[in-house]
Image (tube, rainbow, N blue to C red; front, top):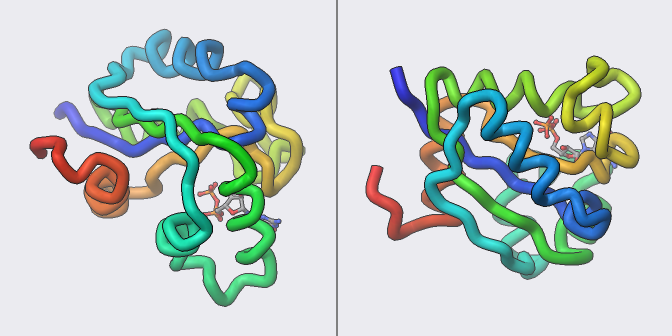
Length: 137
Ligand code: GDP
């Protein structure tokens, strides 16, 4: 069944000019970009997006990183999009990410790790609304 997920190309990968290379990974795996926007998150919006992590010691550092430059937000659509995107991304820490994954190939470290991807269909719906409130479900 076709599904949608929210993907972000984070400021480190945008800065390294890897937007096209990363989007190609999604397209090559059969995921379709059905919405996209490049934007600079405000600290307030970044805190809201990562609110689930607000008690973690790295929260403020993560917010500073996510607001350090533009991000590319896109909605990916396809069969099992949430899980497929997570597989393409690889583990949070690039040192642990499987060879050939986006994070293994493009991430700097556990924080500046190139991409975000929704971790469940429920989270995907909320995160898609966060970036694309006008997109029909
Ligand atoms: P994800 O779902 O793989 O993105 O991982 P999490 O939801 O656990 O973490 C959200 C984001 O917080 C990650 O993608 C990283 O950018 C950052 N992060 C996670 N763990 C750490 C950590 O131990 N230190 C720092 N500085 N950042 C982290």
